[in-house]
Image (cartoon, rainbow, N blue to C red; front, side, top):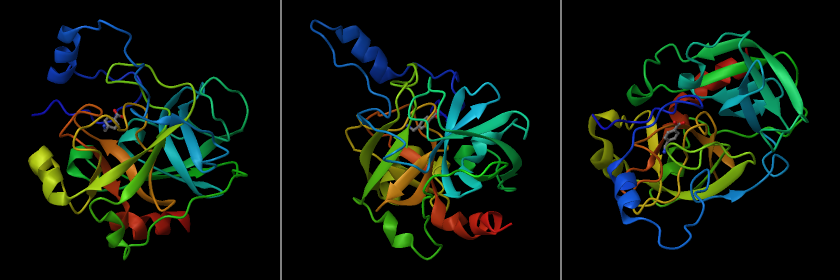
Amino acid sequence: MFGLTRAKKAGAVALATTAAAATALLGAPTAVAAPQPIVGGTTTTTTAYPFMMQITDASQNQFCGGTLVSATKVVTAAHCMVGETTSSVRVVGGRTYLNGTNGTVSRVSKIWINPDYTDATNGDDVAVLTLSTSMPYTKASYVSSSQTSVYAAGTTARIVGWGTTSENGSSSNQLRTATVPIVSDSSCKSSYGSDYVQTDMVCAGYTSGGTDTCQGDSGGPLLIGGVLAGITSWGEGCAQAGYPGVYTRLTTFSSLVTAQVNS
Ligand code: 4AZ
């Protein structure tokens, strides 16, 4: 219906949008600011966000983000793991740059995908990876099921990732971050209609757009007060006015995640 971008892996084709087409028609009489990954963000490091993991293929090409929640457990998006096997995936910690070779690379011994998951726009977009090698990095705390007040509209949340600079752009070599306000359920429903499942999702972004997650940021964290509260899931394009990013509402899945973390 919208040509929704369901945060596929890097290389997924994004649709040209009306806004992008309009921008192209307006032309660029003077230099235009370079589009920024995690559109509107700033560069950061895995030292600042030590729980920020690259989810990669066997050749260590990053396609999603993940969040370390214990030495051997990583929370990511279910849609990131579709078609993946324990042989096809690696998790890389402590590596700020996509072209780096430093940090810790782990194989994955188990992929748990929420059994209810079908499509990001139906909700249930959460997965937990079990690592073969412990990550020597500080883990993130995550919300408990009772902490639903963290999603009060207007609350500042932080997004982190290596995603693309624009809907058809390239990934950022360096990790990036930005802050975005939580959007009310009623407003997000106005944007996305029945694709917005408020029990399973939460939206974040500015009404005017300009700052957002984008392709390759999927699976990465939405942090509120430094605590993992959401997972980058989907949206209509990236940073478009009126179309905030959609994140997995982690309070709904907190107990399921804990069962996996303790398994
Ligand atoms: C993606 O394709 C993606 N603007 C991630 C986030 C959003 C859209 C697409 C939200 O990974």
